[in-house]
Length: 233
Length: 191
Image (cartoon, rainbow over all chains, first blue to last red; front, side, top):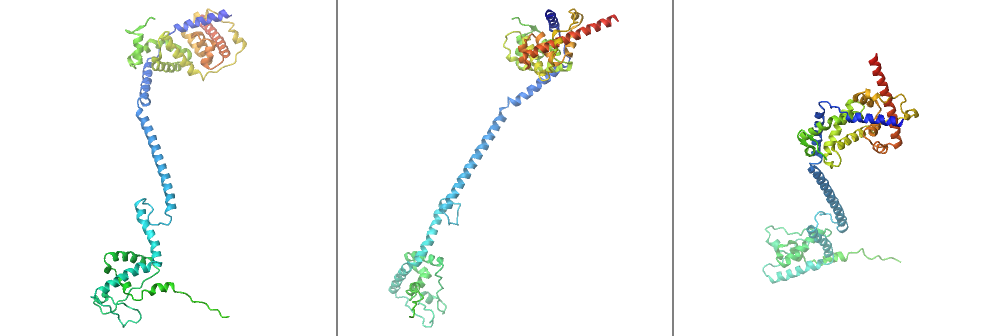
């Protein structure tokens, strides 16, 4: 039985190995077309490294941009926190980093100092130039001092400006608001400048220097009281 | 190793031309092996159109991988092995394995050894094509290509015992169909 099977296999093997079948006529055209497709697909995948580079370039660029934006966001957030701590009450300019802050800080200090000057050093800053001016006026004999007797309510000093003015009406000083810091701060700075250069240009200094009762002004602030309370037994 | 001369070109020249992608040499190679390889494809395929697909796929693989041929053994054997592997890959998932009966394992009892002599090659090829994919593939690999059951099992992803049983079943069906066809031819000649 085994020998029968072996002979069967051998016979079939010989017949099949010797057997040749001619393929149909259009078979080569099909194979050639398939090879053309393979050749057409190869350059897209292998011979074109430029799209891959561009893809990698885009990816790298996107990563760089995202990293720079992230760092910029973190730096900006950190600087905002620093500004909030250091310049807490400054409202004017937050954006400028170096120079505007330097230019604004004196203004902040200026306000605080003006209040202090207005309270404590006001007689010093104002009266000194006034005394110097009185001495200067005494030395100059050209303008004698005259007091107007008609005005009883407000004591008006004799001023050379009022004399030089063409009108016959007396000159009244403008009311000074002591509570407003601006009106007091600006004349102090101007008064310093005027004393060094040209004292005749400042009207406020002139008015304060010619005021005879200028010594009463600080007394009004200091000596004001509600009085003593006397309790009856 | 003797080189085959085909249309005035040696086999090496044809291989080099195919490696360069020259369509002229590719067509020469096709003309050299197309008839033999198409017979192989017909043995592994169950119909004519499937054999054409196998032939096309096999030649495309040959032209793409012809640079890998290192000159060890015959070039025709290398090309044939590519076609066999292509057929195995094609029918690997379609293999339908049937259970084997004891009577089928012993072979067909009424088979006569002289029956093959009365049939032509094309008739035997048609009978082989009537087998199922699993039977036909195992039969072709073992009987015609000369692989062992272990190699067949590795190639097809089946066990060695399964390959043996498939071969026995294929042999039983072939003997039975050959006997029936011989009887049919005798009856037609006598009648």
